[in-house]
Picture 1 (cartoon, one colour):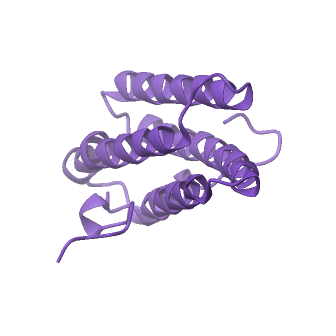
Picture 2 (picture 1 turned 120 degrees about the vertical axis):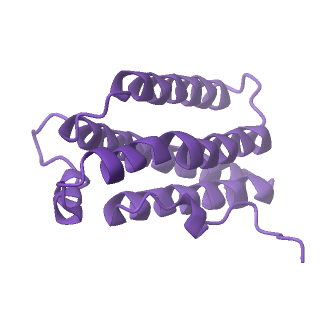
Length: 159
């Protein structure tokens, strides 16, 4: 049977850290919402798309901050490269959002497909690296500690 959903969470994407998995699931849901918005094709759909883009940009920032705090805590040796990937992604998304807001040629459908492909590939390949590192190199770290690391920064606390 052919899968018809634009994007869905599958357990194969799990990194085994419940709070991070919850955040990844939220990113998948926000991407699905963004796709639904761009498929409306009306002015109200355009406004909904703009709001949904804002939501996903905010959530991506929160999530990347949580992941990077986790990787710092476990002394993940590939942290610098992982951060570069996050920074490159954020830069591309912000550039595309600016183009969309100024009417300078981003196709919402293409943008959402880029998000879907990047997010799922990043989770499946790159995020699995720190999850594997945690499992095999840092066995003394408890999953309970990971809950704290994935919590949002408190008001006034740097991300």
